[in-house]
Length: 180
Image (cartoon, rainbow, N blue to C red; front, side, top):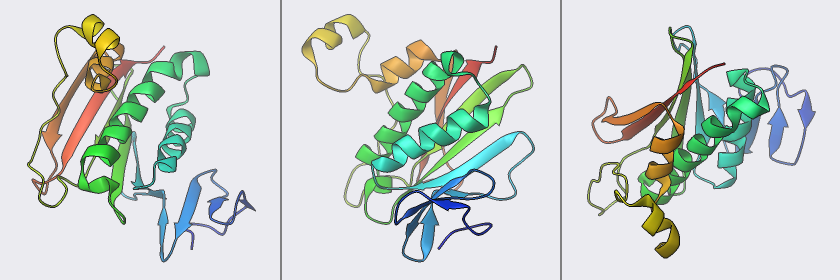
């Protein structure tokens, strides 16, 4: 099932592209990714599924939606990948049926903000908050295999932060970038 208009082309048995160019992956009765209607002017929102392949779909959507050339979109797309991966790996969003909300917003100062909202902790897991791994990124690069995603977010964006979502269970992590 697709959301919106009838599909213009089908790229695989489950992935379809609408007339507006949005990609939807059919999963039972709920199609993901799915645009979220009624977002404020200048903000675009999409709900993605729990599968890791949804991360590349999110990058494609963000690149098209941002209007940035590829040379200016690198940092935005890498940060989006890190935040989306964290949501799937560490929260209930990564469980079957889980979702990740991604917002891309044009800021008044010609900046862009990408926000990734998860569904909160997995059942039985403690509530955690986004925290960079350490102050010594160079040592971590040499000795650790993972855990540097938020350090990378901090170094590639002009600002970043997090807050609890409206329900109080999920977390939204955001990062801001300058537009050329």
